[in-house]
Amino acid sequence: QVQLVESGGGLVQAGGSLRLSCAASLRTLSVYAMGWFRQAPGKEREFVAAITWSSGNTYYADSVKGRFTISRDNAKNTVYLQMNSLKPEDTAVYYCARRSSYGTGYESAFLYDYWGQGTQVTVSS
Image (cartoon, rainbow, N blue to C red; front, side, top):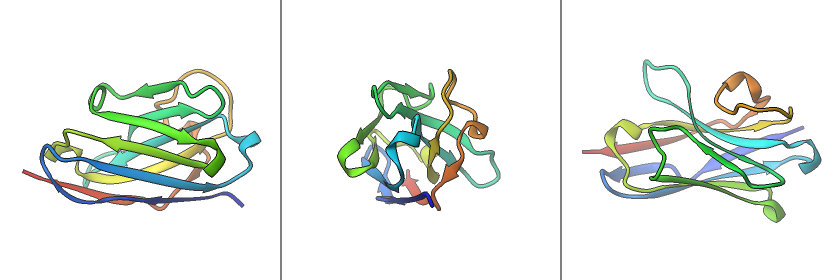
């Protein structure tokens, strides 16, 4: 059974930084990519960033490009999301997710088959 456990969320002032971690218990052969999504109250879940597991190619939403960095540690089966220059509009529950299917495109939540429970990020102004 695949388990994804996020950590690292919290309360931070605007302009501050946080690093989220997603520890995965999974067979790496079954992972094509890992993604981070977020969902604010009253809004739909939206794509934040993704990284391919073997090659480490990264993809970002325009809203976080230049501020957030996704990375992975294959030996630890862990994915990170370094978030800098945080803004109040970054406030959301952040989820990591696994994608096992190969192909192009990373922004649709339907491409991911396992999800973590989420970690709250709150950015105060």
